[in-house]
Image (cartoon, rainbow over all chains, first blue to last red):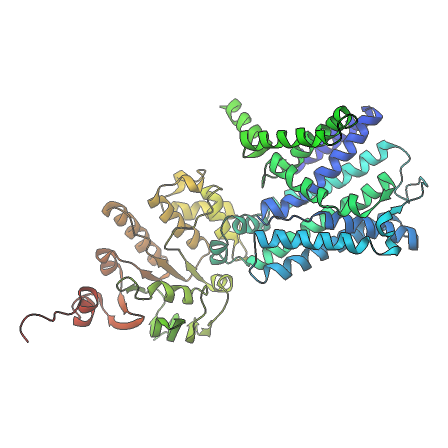
Length: 316
Length: 244
């Protein structure tokens, strides 16, 4: 009972904080919640179940394109698009997982397959005129609740927070159920897991499906926030790497470490970009890289590990 | 007479030209402890891996509780009631001892009242309850061996396959494991034990199966097997000097 109560309180608190932020603060809030959601979703497969993906942009992109295409071509509300995104994301995750894991391929092989599939999707979408090809799709601004356009940044704060809450809720539910132990066992030692009655292939496929479905939820929210998507921004390898880096910096496999990674790194990226981006294009990426190396060198368990160690020391 | 719990019939496993296991047959009844011995390279571990589903037999059949289980996946066998340990201990290193055992409780996907309570009871049985919150990687070797047993017990097996759970332990630690194993048998679990510690296997086992070069060369009561000339020869080599 206590963790879910804690989650509800945290969400309520954030919902109260959002209106107090400046417009720029609300922009950062939305980005942190969305990137945090992608990182948390990545971590279900990459951290909890131990199967690294280098292609999570595939799910975000699929979600963004499904809902946007449905809205633009068939006037389907993005609210329904959100559900469609989750279904398609889950199906993609399951299909990719089943194809690879059934053949007993893991680790580097799975990572490379995810990278390849995401890149393929990027190039396919870049050449399909119905999806706007390389130019992308622009969503005309028609603010209304049914259109998933809220007219203010605050509305999107709540939408992004909603996605974050759903992702966090699912993570808590997994953690407290048999599935949490299935993932743990698979991550730690597949032979032992099988000897304990755990279907290793099935467990990994389930992890991929949940992870894909949740990551896909972010796509429609992002698309309607920015009102424009193109292959590079929602299917590009940068987004896939971000999901992985936030998890590593925040704490791989820890329940909510990846969110912490996003909380620290998203504002940092924005700050560095605004400080340095104008004068020396690209320098912010170098500084960003150095900070990443420092964090990973000094705190291999991630920021979450650092934090929980500090809490443990305080309580002694 | 009850039907055997485990029936191994003419099981062979070849790796290329090497016959690691060659036409081995034996039975094991419920509540029985059978010891599997033989010199290094005799094929004991390979036979173990085929019974637990990790390796497919090239030939032959394995039946458990009257049904054919040849070639079934390890997790299915675990759900049917065949538990196993690994010769080289394979704990879930980065999580607590208790979580290791809970994974064993929930692994077979059966109804459980409270996995945490059930796991603590199992830890109690192997005298590891005081280490419940420790990370598995921080355990000593004897503790890791007991964790290996605890995790397998947590799946509620009817047959437990133990692969050298005493290797590398001191005599006192071996005695502790023997007490635990006698206790396990009293709980109604049949055991198939691969072991090199002769003192232990001779006193625990109801029956002994001896393997050498992939074949079964003897089977019988511990005392009879220990005096069997072919067994002595397999372990010590032929006496080809002396009176002809």
